Image (cartoon, rainbow, N blue to C red; front, side, top):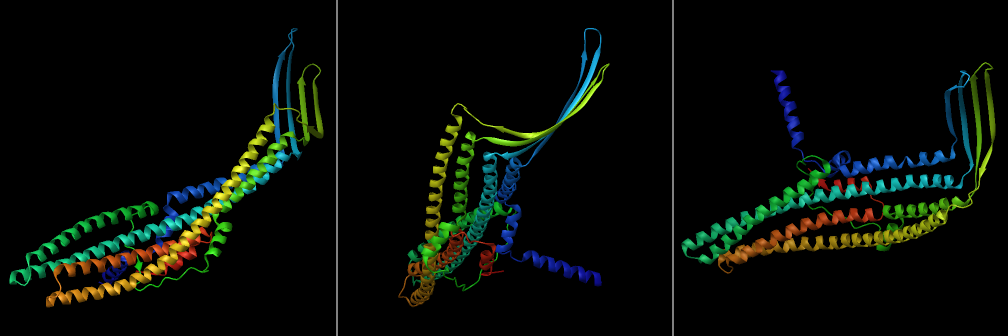
Length: 428
């Protein structure tokens, strides 16, 4: 009996946990594990980090072992068997192209890290946008259903008033038309919700459960710092697209020096040990040790080096213009996001006032309809205005939150801690 009670308690606890809504941070953790784009970027980062050891290899010694055996038959029926091997070491002393490639390897790793950081910020934005899109779609269904319920009451009232002769059939037809429209809007809202949930599922790799909603009466904070030029300046310096383009320009500059090295001499330290053994009537075996410096000076390569230098200079110019494009794009993104947040906050405030006014107008129209100074269409219009205002208010809050995250992303400062702050605005 006691075991049965314990089992029921455990089962009840599990059911309660399953029924509990998941919040934004939990959805993000799922995306970190299951999002294909993020997994691809993580693999690209691992691949990019291998550029440094590959470039470093051009500065380190190389060692090779070679050898062979032979059998030679001479005309007087003699047979000579021979074998040899050689162990050789080469240490670059001066190879300017290899040094520039090593510096490029370090830059390539930094570029991979910047690209991965940008992908991580993009994941935060994609998760947040998809999350609040689902909440907005759920809100739309809720508002449509509430409006349909209110219209149903108004439709029944119009029918009763028509039966007792205090209203015309027009009131009934108007209420019926609004009801049919609400039903159509409900079907559209349900379809939109499924689409938004599918978009979120694509990111996290599983069907999302019930989502935590925004707390009632949530107050959204203004961006800090409050000056737009500070955000723009941060975007022009710290935005990861700008950082990546700046690294790309440095890589292109190093590429010019690497190609110009085609005119420079190269110097290597070489050392080898050679062993030869011939099995004849007079067996010969010997070892030879060699150490020295080997140099090479390129004289003419059909103008190929000059052509590669001109190509590298043109690519550097391209990288410089790409950097300017990235800087301007980051600045514009910061401006748009900042204005999106500030205008969103003003819109939220205005819609909150409009919600109060719309509710008062609806109450007044209902009272006027009861005493005969308002007609049915006035009540229906007031209801529609109230629910439309509430839907716009919810959407404005969500957009303002996401724009706040976009602003930090444009400035290059978006981190998981910012997502935790947004998550604190939700309730299960």
